[in-house]
Image (cartoon, rainbow, N blue to C red):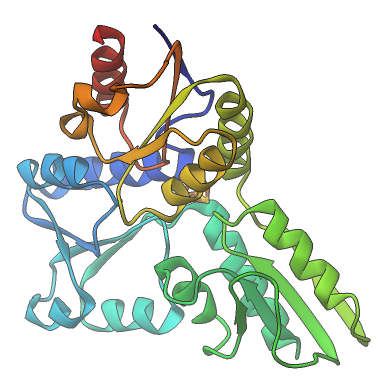
Length: 281
Ligand code: SF4
Protein backbone atom coordinates (compact mmCIF):
# COMPACT_ATOMS: atom_id res chain seq x y z
CA UNK A 1 0.00 0.00 0.00
CA UNK A 2 1.32 3.42 -0.97
CA UNK A 3 0.81 6.52 1.16
CA UNK A 4 0.95 9.89 -0.60
CA UNK A 5 1.12 13.21 1.22
CA UNK A 6 -0.60 16.21 -0.37
CA UNK A 7 1.53 19.25 -1.08
CA UNK A 8 0.94 22.19 1.27
CA UNK A 9 -0.42 19.99 4.06
CA UNK A 10 -0.34 21.29 7.62
CA UNK A 11 0.64 24.57 9.30
CA UNK A 12 0.20 27.61 7.10
CA UNK A 13 2.37 30.70 7.37
CA UNK A 14 -0.09 32.58 9.64
CA UNK A 15 -0.57 29.76 12.11
CA UNK A 16 3.15 29.04 12.30
CA UNK A 17 3.73 32.73 12.95
CA UNK A 18 1.16 32.78 15.80
CA UNK A 19 2.56 29.65 17.48
CA UNK A 20 6.13 30.93 17.20
CA UNK A 21 5.03 34.33 18.54
CA UNK A 22 3.36 32.67 21.55
CA UNK A 23 6.50 30.72 22.43
CA UNK A 24 8.67 33.80 21.88
CA UNK A 25 6.37 35.89 24.10
CA UNK A 26 6.45 33.23 26.81
CA UNK A 27 10.25 33.21 26.74
CA UNK A 28 10.35 37.01 26.89
CA UNK A 29 7.98 37.51 29.84
CA UNK A 30 8.58 34.16 31.50
CA UNK A 31 5.13 34.05 33.10
CA UNK A 32 1.68 32.77 32.30
CA UNK A 33 0.60 33.99 28.85
CA UNK A 34 -3.01 34.10 27.66
CA UNK A 35 -4.40 33.72 24.19
CA UNK A 36 -7.83 35.10 23.36
CA UNK A 37 -9.49 31.83 22.40
CA UNK A 38 -7.50 28.73 21.46
CA UNK A 39 -4.53 29.80 19.36
CA UNK A 40 -5.40 27.17 16.80
CA UNK A 41 -8.07 24.50 16.41
CA UNK A 42 -5.97 21.57 17.44
CA UNK A 43 -6.17 20.06 20.89
CA UNK A 44 -2.69 18.50 20.68
CA UNK A 45 -1.15 21.89 19.99
CA UNK A 46 -3.28 23.45 22.73
CA UNK A 47 -1.86 20.84 25.17
CA UNK A 48 1.67 21.59 23.97
CA UNK A 49 1.10 25.30 24.59
CA UNK A 50 -0.31 24.65 28.07
CA UNK A 51 2.83 22.68 28.90
CA UNK A 52 4.64 25.91 27.99
CA UNK A 53 2.43 28.00 30.32
CA UNK A 54 0.31 29.44 27.51
CA UNK A 55 -3.44 29.26 28.15
CA UNK A 56 -6.52 30.09 26.13
CA UNK A 57 -8.97 32.47 27.76
CA UNK A 58 -12.46 33.49 26.71
CA UNK A 59 -13.37 37.15 26.18
CA UNK A 60 -15.89 36.85 29.06
CA UNK A 61 -13.02 35.94 31.41
CA UNK A 62 -10.74 38.83 30.45
CA UNK A 63 -12.13 40.75 33.44
CA UNK A 64 -10.29 38.35 35.75
CA UNK A 65 -6.92 39.46 34.30
CA UNK A 66 -4.79 42.15 35.91
CA UNK A 67 -2.96 45.12 34.50
CA UNK A 68 0.33 43.98 33.01
CA UNK A 69 -0.92 40.48 32.16
CA UNK A 70 0.04 39.39 28.67
CA UNK A 71 -2.59 38.41 26.12
CA UNK A 72 -1.99 37.29 22.56
CA UNK A 73 -4.42 37.78 19.69
CA UNK A 74 -4.52 34.73 17.47
CA UNK A 75 -4.22 34.57 13.68
CA UNK A 76 -8.01 35.05 13.14
CA UNK A 77 -7.73 38.59 14.53
CA UNK A 78 -10.34 40.50 16.54
CA UNK A 79 -12.64 43.48 16.10
CA UNK A 80 -11.44 47.00 16.82
CA UNK A 81 -13.73 47.09 19.85
CA UNK A 82 -12.09 44.01 21.39
CA UNK A 83 -8.62 45.32 20.60
CA UNK A 84 -9.38 48.63 22.35
CA UNK A 85 -11.02 46.84 25.30
CA UNK A 86 -7.87 44.77 25.95
CA UNK A 87 -5.55 47.76 25.66
CA UNK A 88 -7.78 49.95 27.85
CA UNK A 89 -7.63 47.29 30.55
CA UNK A 90 -3.88 47.83 30.74
CA UNK A 91 -3.02 44.40 29.35
CA UNK A 92 0.10 43.83 27.29
CA UNK A 93 -1.45 42.94 23.93
CA UNK A 94 0.61 40.92 21.47
CA UNK A 95 -1.00 41.02 18.06
CA UNK A 96 -0.41 37.73 16.23
CA UNK A 97 -3.18 38.34 13.70
CA UNK A 98 -2.14 36.81 10.39
CA UNK A 99 -0.95 39.65 8.12
CA UNK A 100 -3.39 38.46 5.43
CA UNK A 101 -6.30 38.91 7.85
CA UNK A 102 -4.97 42.31 8.94
CA UNK A 103 -5.01 43.29 5.28
CA UNK A 104 -8.74 42.44 5.04
CA UNK A 105 -9.51 44.35 8.26
CA UNK A 106 -7.72 47.42 6.87
CA UNK A 107 -9.60 47.27 3.56
CA UNK A 108 -12.96 46.88 5.31
CA UNK A 109 -12.16 49.77 7.65
CA UNK A 110 -11.00 52.03 4.81
CA UNK A 111 -13.92 51.39 2.46
CA UNK A 112 -16.52 51.47 5.20
CA UNK A 113 -15.17 54.90 6.22
CA UNK A 114 -15.50 55.96 2.58
CA UNK A 115 -19.20 55.07 2.60
CA UNK A 116 -19.10 51.62 0.99
CA UNK A 117 -21.49 48.88 2.13
CA UNK A 118 -19.29 45.95 3.15
CA UNK A 119 -20.10 42.39 2.05
CA UNK A 120 -18.23 39.47 3.58
CA UNK A 121 -18.35 36.00 2.08
CA UNK A 122 -17.93 33.64 5.01
CA UNK A 123 -19.37 32.05 8.11
CA UNK A 124 -20.97 34.69 10.32
CA UNK A 125 -20.07 32.69 13.45
CA UNK A 126 -16.41 32.26 12.58
CA UNK A 127 -14.08 34.41 14.73
CA UNK A 128 -12.22 35.72 11.68
CA UNK A 129 -15.48 36.99 10.13
CA UNK A 130 -16.71 38.41 13.45
CA UNK A 131 -13.35 40.19 13.75
CA UNK A 132 -13.45 41.58 10.19
CA UNK A 133 -17.04 42.77 10.66
CA UNK A 134 -15.83 44.60 13.74
CA UNK A 135 -13.73 46.90 11.53
CA UNK A 136 -16.87 48.33 9.91
CA UNK A 137 -18.94 48.70 13.10
CA UNK A 138 -20.56 45.28 12.62
CA UNK A 139 -22.45 46.64 9.64
CA UNK A 140 -21.42 44.09 6.97
CA UNK A 141 -23.79 41.88 5.02
CA UNK A 142 -22.45 38.37 5.53
CA UNK A 143 -23.25 35.69 2.96
CA UNK A 144 -22.26 32.11 3.59
CA UNK A 145 -22.50 30.91 0.00
CA UNK A 146 -22.82 33.96 -2.20
CA UNK A 147 -26.61 34.23 -2.07
CA UNK A 148 -28.32 37.44 -0.98
CA UNK A 149 -31.77 38.14 0.44
CA UNK A 150 -31.65 41.76 -0.54
CA UNK A 151 -30.77 43.72 -3.66
CA UNK A 152 -27.64 45.80 -3.21
CA UNK A 153 -26.90 49.14 -4.76
CA UNK A 154 -24.78 52.23 -4.18
CA UNK A 155 -21.12 51.70 -3.28
CA UNK A 156 -20.30 48.11 -2.34
CA UNK A 157 -17.03 46.51 -1.22
CA UNK A 158 -16.84 42.72 -1.06
CA UNK A 159 -14.17 40.59 0.67
CA UNK A 160 -13.93 36.96 1.63
CA UNK A 161 -13.07 34.90 4.70
CA UNK A 162 -9.55 33.60 4.03
CA UNK A 163 -10.59 29.95 4.11
CA UNK A 164 -13.51 30.21 1.67
CA UNK A 165 -13.88 28.01 -1.39
CA UNK A 166 -13.19 29.64 -4.78
CA UNK A 167 -16.52 28.37 -6.13
CA UNK A 168 -18.35 30.35 -3.41
CA UNK A 169 -16.39 33.46 -4.34
CA UNK A 170 -17.32 33.02 -8.02
CA UNK A 171 -20.96 32.60 -7.02
CA UNK A 172 -20.82 35.75 -4.87
CA UNK A 173 -19.40 37.83 -7.72
CA UNK A 174 -21.91 36.39 -10.21
CA UNK A 175 -24.83 37.15 -7.92
CA UNK A 176 -23.54 40.63 -7.18
CA UNK A 177 -23.03 41.44 -10.84
CA UNK A 178 -26.76 41.26 -11.56
CA UNK A 179 -27.17 44.40 -9.44
CA UNK A 180 -26.38 47.94 -10.51
CA UNK A 181 -23.88 49.90 -8.49
CA UNK A 182 -22.34 53.29 -8.39
CA UNK A 183 -19.16 51.44 -7.58
CA UNK A 184 -18.24 47.83 -6.78
CA UNK A 185 -14.88 47.01 -5.21
CA UNK A 186 -14.19 43.30 -5.01
CA UNK A 187 -11.19 41.80 -3.25
CA UNK A 188 -10.74 38.06 -3.46
CA UNK A 189 -9.07 37.65 -0.07
CA UNK A 190 -9.09 33.87 -0.05
CA UNK A 191 -5.66 33.02 1.24
CA UNK A 192 -3.25 31.47 -1.24
CA UNK A 193 -2.29 28.90 1.40
CA UNK A 194 -5.92 27.81 1.53
CA UNK A 195 -6.27 27.76 -2.21
CA UNK A 196 -3.05 25.78 -2.69
CA UNK A 197 -3.95 23.17 -0.09
CA UNK A 198 -7.46 22.89 -1.57
CA UNK A 199 -6.03 22.41 -5.07
CA UNK A 200 -3.57 19.76 -3.86
CA UNK A 201 -6.24 17.78 -2.04
CA UNK A 202 -8.52 18.03 -5.07
CA UNK A 203 -5.81 16.52 -7.31
CA UNK A 204 -4.65 13.91 -4.82
CA UNK A 205 -8.15 12.70 -3.91
CA UNK A 206 -8.81 11.90 -7.59
CA UNK A 207 -5.85 9.52 -7.64
CA UNK A 208 -6.18 7.54 -4.41
CA UNK A 209 -8.50 4.85 -3.04
CA UNK A 210 -8.65 6.26 0.47
CA UNK A 211 -8.14 9.77 1.85
CA UNK A 212 -7.26 10.81 5.36
CA UNK A 213 -7.82 14.45 6.27
CA UNK A 214 -6.12 15.39 9.53
CA UNK A 215 -7.14 18.39 11.58
CA UNK A 216 -9.31 19.78 14.33
CA UNK A 217 -13.00 18.88 14.16
CA UNK A 218 -13.89 22.58 14.56
CA UNK A 219 -11.36 23.80 12.02
CA UNK A 220 -13.14 25.35 9.06
CA UNK A 221 -10.26 24.92 6.62
CA UNK A 222 -9.87 21.24 7.55
CA UNK A 223 -13.60 20.68 7.07
CA UNK A 224 -13.39 22.26 3.62
CA UNK A 225 -10.48 19.98 2.70
CA UNK A 226 -12.59 17.04 3.83
CA UNK A 227 -15.57 18.17 1.70
CA UNK A 228 -13.38 18.57 -1.40
CA UNK A 229 -11.73 15.17 -0.92
CA UNK A 230 -15.05 13.44 -0.26
CA UNK A 231 -16.44 14.61 -3.61
CA UNK A 232 -13.67 12.78 -5.46
CA UNK A 233 -13.05 9.91 -3.08
CA UNK A 234 -15.98 8.29 -1.26
CA UNK A 235 -13.53 6.65 1.21
CA UNK A 236 -12.52 9.88 2.93
CA UNK A 237 -12.20 10.25 6.67
CA UNK A 238 -11.58 13.27 8.90
CA UNK A 239 -9.49 12.59 12.01
CA UNK A 240 -7.94 14.83 14.60
CA UNK A 241 -4.85 12.74 15.25
CA UNK A 242 -3.27 9.32 14.81
CA UNK A 243 -5.07 7.90 17.86
CA UNK A 244 -8.32 7.89 15.89
CA UNK A 245 -6.99 5.44 13.29
CA UNK A 246 -7.81 1.77 13.65
CA UNK A 247 -7.01 -0.98 11.18
CA UNK A 248 -10.77 -1.53 10.74
CA UNK A 249 -11.11 1.61 8.68
CA UNK A 250 -9.57 -0.22 5.72
CA UNK A 251 -11.49 -3.46 6.31
CA UNK A 252 -13.25 -4.97 3.29
CA UNK A 253 -11.92 -2.24 1.04
CA UNK A 254 -9.63 -2.74 -1.92
CA UNK A 255 -7.08 -0.08 -1.04
CA UNK A 256 -3.83 0.34 -2.92
CA UNK A 257 -3.11 4.02 -2.40
CA UNK A 258 -3.90 6.30 0.52
CA UNK A 259 -3.73 10.06 0.37
CA UNK A 260 -3.04 12.18 3.42
CA UNK A 261 -3.59 15.88 3.88
CA UNK A 262 -3.92 18.14 6.90
CA UNK A 263 -5.53 21.44 7.84
CA UNK A 264 -3.58 24.60 8.49
CA UNK A 265 -3.59 24.03 12.24
CA UNK A 266 -2.09 20.54 12.16
CA UNK A 267 1.56 20.35 13.23
CA UNK A 268 4.11 18.25 11.37
CA UNK A 269 4.52 15.77 14.19
CA UNK A 270 0.86 14.66 13.93
CA UNK A 271 1.04 14.31 10.13
CA UNK A 272 4.15 12.11 10.49
CA UNK A 273 2.43 9.90 13.08
CA UNK A 274 -0.55 9.39 10.75
CA UNK A 275 1.68 8.54 7.78
CA UNK A 276 3.70 6.08 9.87
CA UNK A 277 0.57 4.26 10.99
CA UNK A 278 -0.96 4.12 7.52
CA UNK A 279 2.33 2.83 6.07
CA UNK A 280 2.36 0.19 8.77
CA UNK A 281 -0.98 -1.20 7.56
S1 SF4 B 1 -4.85 30.29 6.21
FE1 SF4 B 1 -3.84 32.05 5.29
S2 SF4 B 1 -4.89 33.78 6.20
FE2 SF4 B 1 -5.35 32.05 7.48
S3 SF4 B 1 -3.79 32.09 9.04
FE3 SF4 B 1 -3.05 30.78 7.42
S4 SF4 B 1 -1.77 32.10 6.13
FE4 SF4 B 1 -3.08 33.40 7.39
